[in-house]
Amino acid sequence: MRVRITETLSIDLQAESWCCERCGTSLGTAHDTYKKGCLIHERDFHEIYQPIITGETYSFSPDKDWCTLLEFYCPSCATMIETEYVPPGHPLTHDIELDLEALKRKVKSLPPMGQEV
Image 1: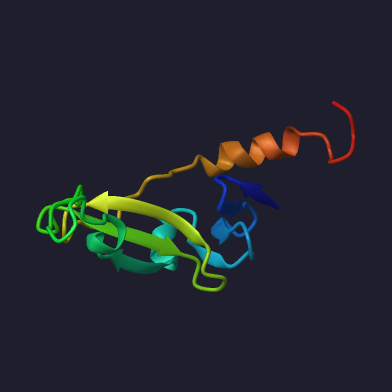
Image 2: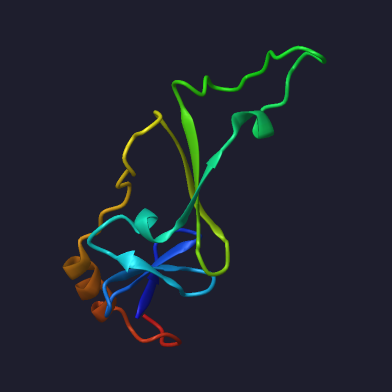
């Protein structure tokens, strides 16, 4: 039984693993961050923030010595799962932690699909 957690992320309650919502690829155990199962791309800020004055290097781009932009992709279908700005060298953040047992109880208490409540 898969439960959708975000637009691009779901959880397989039987396997207790994160999954890509689009293709179903497992992204690792639900007891840890899904980001470990993703492809990670460190993005260059100059690709995103264009100079605001032609010919100058002024932009709203964060200083690369203070901030890094990480993009997390499904390794199977390349759907972007998440992005985050972190200091350079910062470990992966653990942004979602679920009470799996409570979620399993909640799902079991729901009526089957197609039946009225």
